[in-house]
Image 1 (cartoon, rainbow, N blue to C red):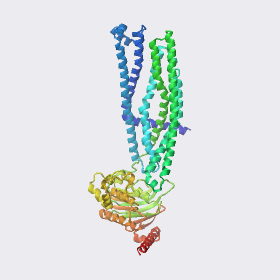
Image 2 (image 1 turned 45 degrees about the vertical axis):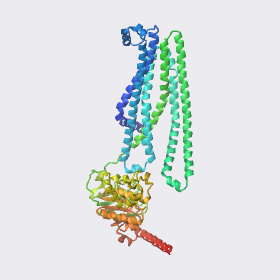
Image 3 (image 1 turned 45 degrees about the horizontal axis):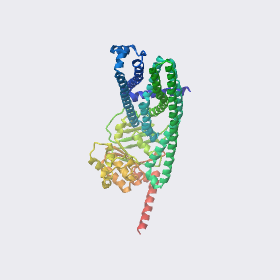
Image 4 (image 1 turned 60 degrees about the horizontal axis):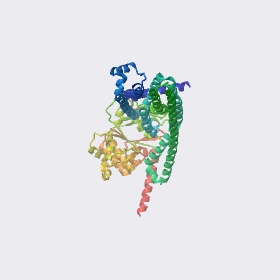
Length: 616
């Protein structure tokens, strides 16, 4: 229990630090908003006092209970007789203070709007920037949808609280304090009567909104489920069409939609009951104050003007008090959202493990007894040692889960090896600044990601400073230039979300062209030509070899025709380097490479024979 309490206290401290960080640039607007709020409250409370003063002092014969410095000014003008003959002065005073209230309210809301939007912008920028800086492994263990929810919905929850509720808390407390001070200075009995139901209204509000918070959560979760269903369906629309599942998807969406409707409708009914009931309670309080005030006024125990003050103040207090429960409930929701935001911002960023050097990279790579595991109980790679010289092509072969992708990810330092050392041109990669390292190592994944932009934008995204001719040259090397030119809009063709308008092979070749724009001395092809035919594969490799003979190239592939031209072939099995050498060496050596080569050769012979029979 002590540990839990300590963690909770630390969590609260983190929240306050986060609040300070997010409001740092908007604190001026918050302070100005608070000042305008106080001005509006003062002006609002003065209006009933002016009305009471006019009725009791100017039009009646009662003595004024205004402060002496105010009465000295009035008496200097001529006192009661002067105001009676210039009654419009009282009317002007009412208009002026009402106008001050309106203007102050406008500037208060304007300032708080600036502050809330500023906080939201700061939070979004901080979250986005932080997510760009966390380690690669972080994104493999979190849900993208959850991150989007935290960066949008949770930020908006905090923004709404600041915009609508933050100063309302101050406003409610100040209004109750000021009203109580004024009313008790006039008549204690009438003050107690006028505020008799307000504590009960506050308790009902707080308890109700604490209970209805659960229904708010259910409605939010139902909306999130509805949005997720819609997003999933739109993203996988081709799969839905391919398997003819439109009706099932419509039914699924309809079920989520009904669930959201029912829970939101139930929430609306609960809110309607509360607002109707609290309105009735508020009107009862006003009626009680009015009836008691009339009775006391008839007896002469309070004046008509004082009666007007009590009834007006009672009406002014009813709304803020009944709203306070919701403010506290929203405070709880905002606190939860702040905690979810803080979980992202508290995630450790990717740090430089070494000296952050920026050496000139030529492409000599050395793996020295490298071991790696995602956790300490599971080694994905074990005792990997090999060397690659500038201009060499290193092919990597292995079964699924043998550690091929992990090996090249270690080279980019997306993960750090748990033992051993990786050197590039004699420098430990842990001592190379990670941005410099990755700018000098280009990579194409098996399933490349393309942005919903034009083909031109997708290719040149790694280096916007290069010309269109450079883009065309990279596309030619990737054997995709002619394909792009055949499109109606050429390089201005928008590829759609995730490149859905392109085939798998076209996406891979566009991704290859994009990598070539990087002009890196080390290139990695992570099974990135699996969707292109053998002839295109050979053409791309030939063009690459002709274009950059000093480039060190790593190719992960299962095609023997792709692997056989490599200067060195690495064969991985169960995370260990079981074979390495040229095609001629490995084809004559018992092992995985020889078995795969025989299987692929047999399949090719079978296909040729079937093709010959078909021609006959």
